[in-house]
Image (cartoon, rainbow, N blue to C red; front, side, top):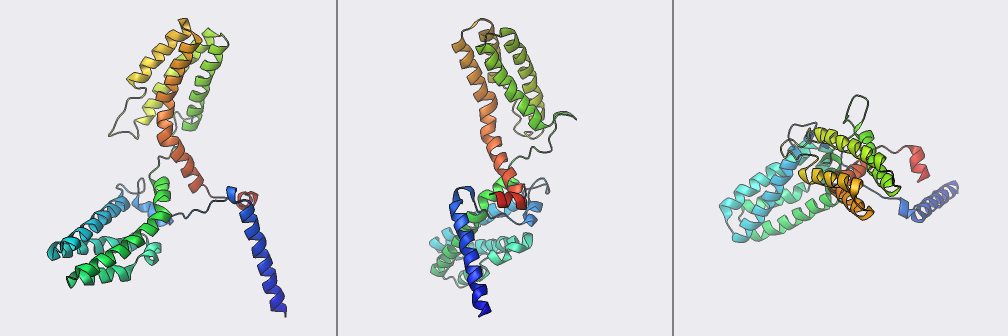
Length: 284
């Protein structure tokens, strides 16, 4: 009898929890995060993007296996199946926690079908293996890219006392101060702030090249410098419309384009890597 009451209590608790989750479904998002062991195969923990290179090999080998099975080219099919088997099994070597996600039986049957030159069976097993790969990618591909391939700005410092985030906040305030001062007719303050903004952008550019080494892009670019000069002239002599146009162009060139690449992705990365406290979980 007591077990009945216990089970009934558990059911009631589960229903309450389910009801709360449903009620707050707009605030709840379930995300599968990759095992910590995966980090060792990505930069900066590794000098090379080892995991990515293995994935690229698998994608190429899957394509080759399908192609040569369709063409019924036994020798080349056998070659590519051998490579596919090697790099497929390597997944478990690199991340042991994901061994259970591998379709080892499917891989073995695909290899056996290749040995027997049973091209139809190869294509069947290839399709099954592809579905297994797609299922794992559905869970982890985007999250892994956000976690390990998004720039991390937390450790970057502009000076010993000024962090990257503080510097970026200063630039944002300077852009807005120029707009505010121009609208209120305070030309002197608008021009003085523009000088600060110009120098702040140069300082930012000196930091950006630390990561953009191979594809060095000058920041501020020539287009940005031209817009800064145009903005200075419009603040001194131009109309409010000209000032707004120049400031808007500068915001797109100097802010929005980089933010579109880095800011959104980094914001999502912080959500993934920051551990939620029990208080945060309860609050949500």
